[in-house]
Image (cartoon, rainbow, N blue to C red; front, side):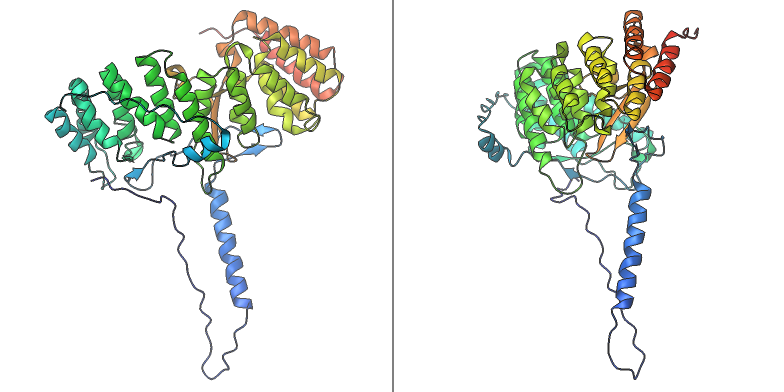
Length: 446
């Protein structure tokens, strides 16, 4: 049975330090044992935190994380999903209007069979922490049966979603045997399969209240599939509000990457200010989202950030250098901006190494759940994943030689030659020549 959990934060166990006093001695307590005990406990906690953290950074950017055992150490538990409880306050503060309420589309009586299937799904027992292949097949079959009920299943799904509860099926027993990582995500997909005004209305209702980044991305994608071009502004507003809530949240922060994917995929010039505002907190996400906006509309913002005197000649610009180098094969103004910085001698040694990577090696991308082509990233030669502890940012890269066209490669080679003519920095010359050799090398035959 699913139970609501109001607070998911773990509460640390408190232990007292007892002072042992020999019989017959005065009860005068010294602070030294307590101080020593606190220092020892603090050292142990710090060691464990550092040992668990997969984040790794070098002086100039992210370092690829190594793969490891990602299976859970504890059985999955029911949990509540975040809602935008402060959305009214945020709208009042920003002066934005509240979204128009979604008109509920009446369904003449829910299907009794759908209610029965929904009951089985909502009471699915994973208390033993093991999802066998047989149990996974049972789960998958239940979702299919629910979708087969069509619009008659919508009332039962609405009733469950209104509880703001979920049950995770992800990585149970070290695998992904179920078709969906969680119950709610499975129900969203069922609504997409059902289609029609009832499913669209319920998807919009949920989009207006959830603050879960993945749910917002999934609902935005589903609505675009069911009703193309009609709900993009609703998706953007949901992403904005959830980001604003996350920016002021305390404690452990979830992955907000899907929200940046929504802004990148459905955004236009109206999201530039939103993304620029998030740069201090989510530099990697915001930079990649700006770079991925359609028709290069995010380029001026990236170039402006790179030219900011506060960042000039420092490692803070390195990731922007790399992303602009990635874009140089598509947008000439990105290459021109790098040439200007080279002539002004505003690129550090580490910055030159990042430019060489952006031109001839790893191409960084958001993990975008709105695009099935790269979510989750398909294992390919050269695929790397990254985790930045600050802001809990996660993304991936693939080699340019695996995805770049012949024209793009030629444009990058031309830019490298221009950059070599604009600098005499030894690190720059070495890095650029290495990039030139990489791009000029013949591709290995399959």
